[in-house]
Length: 261
Image (cartoon, rainbow, N blue to C red; front, top):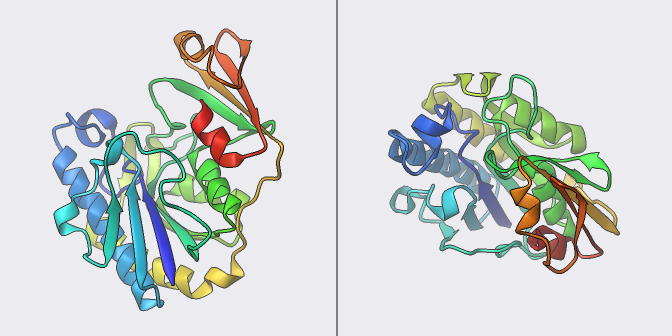
């Protein structure tokens, strides 16, 4: 069986804020990289116990720098380098998608490090008129290729967000947000134990979990925090100005939509 793992950093146990933990200049960024990589390793171990034998990992945080490659399980291959575009190696040959270290969408109450793609620049996003975050967009990308998103780890709010759109997805909540920059976290060892257990369960159940599909045509609206987000995108193919802080993109191709803005 073939598995694609897409990672983030904000939903990892023991990562609480950007300034101290989740940016490349953060005091504990190296420690955060280790925490993430070991959570990925736990997911890989659980998946392999469930029969997976082909694994591709894409580090979706920090331009791919968030994985410590030398301690990644050697069964996995890693996508690296700058300028990587969606779908980043994902295609219909994969049996399932895992999301590791995830956070909820911008504006989620009491959710640790909630944001949508960019904490500095994006206020919110709508797909076909409905609010959506990174979890929904990535799951829909997988659904475009008929690949089910079967497992997610992260904070409790992220897991709840995933279950709203994919009720059968297997979740591993490794922390509970108290606010944007605080959370109650499992110890890393306990978090990894939970991830491994749930990843194995997800692998065993992947055929019962349907891909998350959004039917075309697609209309994506992106609201930025400042007018600059709109200004420097005007002139790109397919970009429409909705107002001073919002753009709209339309497409019948989900991958084109993802890479357009």
